[in-house]
Image (cartoon, rainbow, N blue to C red; front, top):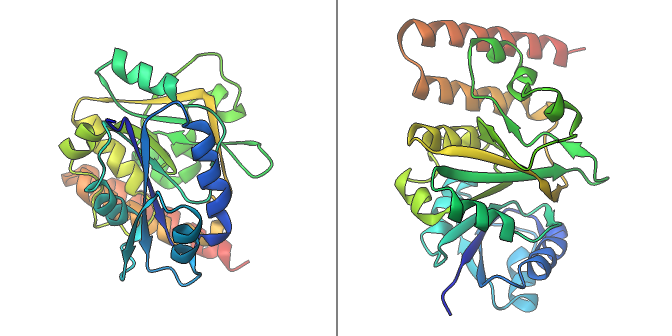
Length: 267
């Protein structure tokens, strides 16, 4: 049978999440021909043993090196057989069937990637889309999420929205598109690689679409202790996507942002 969808998961010490994540995929994808590929980044928590013993049908790639998120996905997608690829975090639970995404992509060839509604462990709304970096939002990262009142409240009136970038915990796209943009930029180890990934899709002339009527739970998410890694990621991003005077000014904005965050972290 031809495989419609390849679900790609990069795992690092995610044993406590794997059962709920994988069971949700098996439940919600039962009407799609699919495969699950897990790239394990040298976990030390017996994740690989658990997968082998309980989910022998999964294509498990055991890396002896921690590739990080972007390179881990790139390595896994090399083995993907599906027409479509879903990049899915290990600390997630899929809540809905995904046929509406396939239908949307089949009917609109201008769409490069699709994301859906993200919820926390209490099933409260979490932002899963944002604006591309600019001078204004490099001063204050919260402005990256300023997509209007509906995105602020998590109350949506439309079936889908065109956005800048989508959270890397759920990215659904044609494998052909993944190959076209050459996947993730491996200069990023973790954080902001999803923003860069969507920027490459935008530069290819393709849309990034958010579908709020489909949802998944994401357990870990972001906290302020990870701010230094976020700043580091955006430093890489602006060097890649800005030049000349624009690069100088946006680098200054990011430096001020980083300085303020460092001061606040001491109090």
